[in-house]
Each structure stands twice: as structure tokens, then as C-alpha cells.
Length: 353
Image (cartoon, rainbow, N blue to C red; front, top):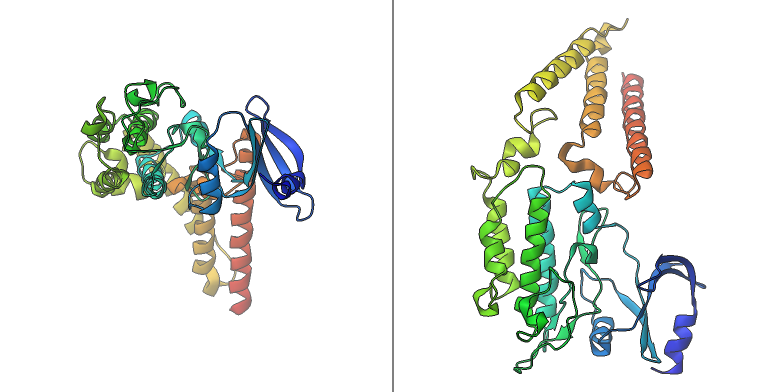
């Protein structure tokens, strides 16, 4: 690396330590004020990072600067706002639809990597290396263990990856290929399915096909895996998949699980809301029903938001924050915003009439 690269790195000022052990820092450019991630790597493949910096691939953080010195690689990459998939696992907020979406997006990212000549194999796909943005899109990070896949018969000699997710060939039983990433996706899919509130075997066949010990017995490409996930997405009437039925996805709170006592309580609650709105009275009879409908919308909005209808909290940055206190404040702010907008709408209609 030349002097210009080293000078470019010096413009980034460290403002926080994200992970001291792995040498990951939050930095700010002194001239533009923009926020980035700085990593100092001891184990890396320089050619991989040079290629990713030159040819950016959608779905992975963009690289802005790299500098190699004294056996270490310093890199500046895009800061991705969101939470890790590991945090979503811990919070148990996953659904079948989200799992299918995330695996499909990871397949799209890996498809571009595997299509290169020679292909780039990530070799460390796991929940902590996947960031879920506030808009619920998966971003693949951490290419420390990545390598180029070649047609030679050389075996992997050093385990680079994570035990439990690493394919058998990463332990010296073969050479890493795109099937290595498919194995990790299969293990990831198994772990995500175990985190679902309601157990399901919908992914069993796909997981088995991805995690075969012999790479030649696995799915041949991530495109094939993506196609299988799309088929599962379309199986809304599968009797073994109650999570993916129209009732589950679009039924109001209280009716999504088909639990008798929950539906009874929800029915009483909705009847009370309707009774309250119908009993509301104003002096101006011409505006009576307009007032009642507006109040009904406000009440139902509070109920739907409170019970996270259609996972609406995940698309709101504050509500999807990894810190519980911030999430609670975000939800409250969201409720007040809805109420304020509804009241403004009611005042606006009254001013028209």
C-alpha cells in the first residue's frame, strides 16, 4: 500500500470501541463528519478485500479504504445501522416469512460472490455476521475467513470459520467451495427455525439437503436454495405451516394463534371498542358518524401497534433498537404520533365541514 492509502486512513477519528478484542471501532471522518467502521485484522486475505473494494456487491458493507502494514490490515467500511441476526434470535422475534426472506437475501448476496472468477467463498456465515437493517434487509459482514475457490484438489489446512457452522471440508476433509457456504446456510436455517414461537418442520428437507457431509450431495448452487425457499413461501396452505397462513399473517391481534381464550378476550375487547365509539355523542349530528369513525380508527391503531400487528415495530428504527429502554420509548413515541395525526385529521375534517 502506498503513502496515499495510509494518509486516507488517518482522516478517520475513533469515537467509540465496538469490540476491543476483535479491534472493531466506530470512526468519524474529520472532514465530512460521516460515520464508518474501522477494523484491524490479523488474519485476512488481502486479495479478497482488494476485490471487494474495487467491485462493490450489494448486500455487503462498502469498503472505502484499506491499508496493510506489519502483518495487519486496516480497513474502513460502511457503517450499517441495524441489529445482528443473533440479537433477533435472542429476542425471539422471527417468523417463517422473515426467515425465508433473510435466507433468500443471503442467497442473492452469495450468488454474486460465487459467480466471480474465481468464486469468493465467505466461510463464516453465522447470525452474528448478519446485520438486519431497520427495513428488515439482511447484510452479510466479516470476510476475514473468505477465500477464493479454485479447481485444485488442495485441502483446507487451517480452520477459519466458526465451529458448528463450518462445513466438514473446513476441517481439512476437502477444499472450500460454494457448497461450503450452502452448508453454513443450512445450519443457520436450522438454528433460525428452532427460534420460532411455534415449532415447524417446514424447513426440514431443505436443511437436510444443505448439510450433507459430502459437498457433492448438497445443493449445487445458492440459486437452487433460493428457489426452494421461494417454493416454501408459496406454500401458504401447508397444514404443517400454520405460521404462513393468511389468518396468521393478516388476522387482527387475538386471532392470529387461533387460541380459544385469546380469541374470546379479543372479541370482548373489540366489542367494547365498538360500543364505546357508537355511544360517543356530539351536538352536531351531521358530524356524528365522522367523529365515531375517527375515534374507532384511533382506538384500533393503538391496539394494532401495541400488539405489533404485521411486525410493524421492525420497520421503525427506534422500535427496533437493540436496547429495551429505547425500544419502549420508541413504541410510546409511535403511539403518541398516531394519536396526534388522527386528531389532526379529525380537526381538518371538521374545518372542511
